[in-house]
Length: 90
Image (cartoon, rainbow, N blue to C red):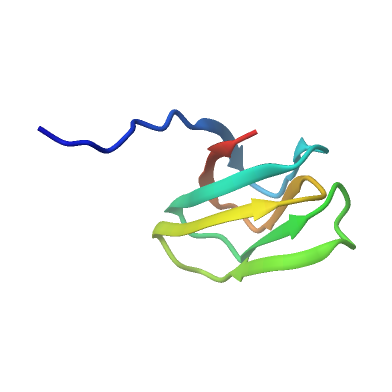
């Protein structure tokens, strides 16, 4: 039997060229699941696309695990036509 505490994550889904302002509060970013690659997916610690860049994901698919605490919010901007899901506590 495992002693690991279960963590429940929230999620936000994006498809196509979108700007997802996920939260303006501090939060945690667990992972980004890229189902269909697009041109780019840019992840920001903040509520605007000029905030601190956490990651720029190119034309790739798969699960990218971050496990980061963000202080200024979470915004994700995608270009092209990706399909992706952001998980974390927000």
